[in-house]
Image (cartoon, rainbow, N blue to C red; front, side, top):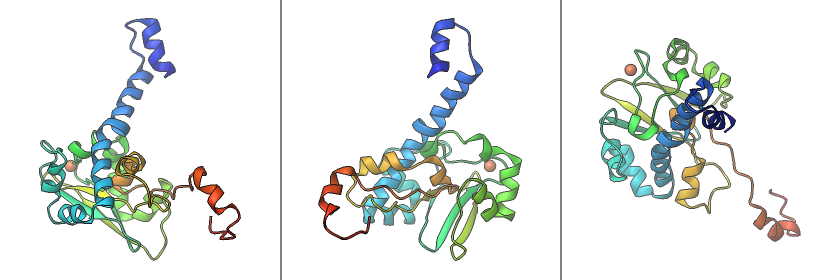
Length: 201
Ligand code: FE
């Protein structure tokens, strides 16, 4: 915000930090919101998830997203036993219509080469430490195939609306470098459990 303000103050002076912030906003908020809506629909509508897994391009088009760089989509679903992560080892193929602009790290030679050789190590560097029993599958994007990961739905979101769920889904979780954290119980529910002796929360 301060960087954006300084643009207004300095009138016409383009602050590189502010530019970064704008690009960052597009990467994190504008682009990936489409993918987040796809994920939220898949979490709440089993029939939609089925269509998504069968023909992702068509199912994503149902929500109005598609076009350039999104013609040949494949959706892979994370489960208790399998974690998917996406890379483009050759360049930076990426599903623009659902995820927006690729982040800088996605295009870096380090990520592109290392995630294939040591996916668990790379994921750990992203703060994603997976259970040793979870199988990690790495998907290599091409111009013909672009992947979207359906992250696991966080615990504690059972009563959430599709819109609330979409707000929760991050870009990195749809690339597979992040696992969505469980959600804390809402404060309105605390009174109900205060003297119930359940102790589960
Ligand atoms: Fe590529």
